[in-house]
Amino acid sequence: MRLILLGPPGAGKGTQAQRLIERHGIPQLSTGDMLREAVAKGTEVGRKAQAIMDAGQLVPDEVVIGIVADRIEEADARKGFILDGFPRTVPQAEALDRLLDAKGLRIDAVLEFQVDEDALVARIEKRAADTLAAGKPVRKDDTPEVFRRRLQEFRQLTAAVVPYYRERGLSHTIGGMAPIDDVTRQIEGALPVEARV
Image (tube, rainbow, N blue to C red; front, side, top):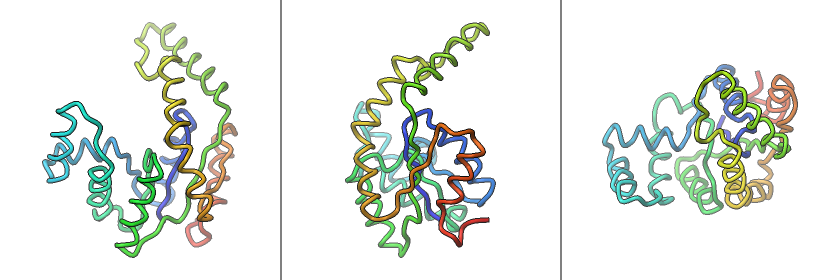
């Protein structure tokens, strides 16, 4: 089973990915983690990515696709995987389709987490206030200003990926503001029948 999780930061994708990992025994593939791993292992693609990052540039799609291609060949991804944070753009989605086609694979479902952005910002503000009240430092990406910027980036880039998958009949809307167990039930109901436990 090969899944893509789409949704803004704070939508609960990480929480639900953990449940999918436990229930279905497939790994969650985060492009950030895969990039760091490829660089640490010194793979050909990792060395290319390192040189680009050292020059202060964004890693181009073909390098990211190369990292994804290498990662899905690993033994733990043979039964399937969960892509989180990728694809972020339509060109990346198209490149992913070509990559999977070449391997005789396909995406089974795209889970689109829909949330109330104002409620997410309020959640982040509360978390930041609670962290400060506990005398701990607030993570840089947990400040309301940074969070709003990340939401805007998501809307500008990734939101275009949703119609791409909708047109292919793969996208399933998940109400991300529901209680965690309800969200899990929605996800299980959206999975291909043969994948449901």
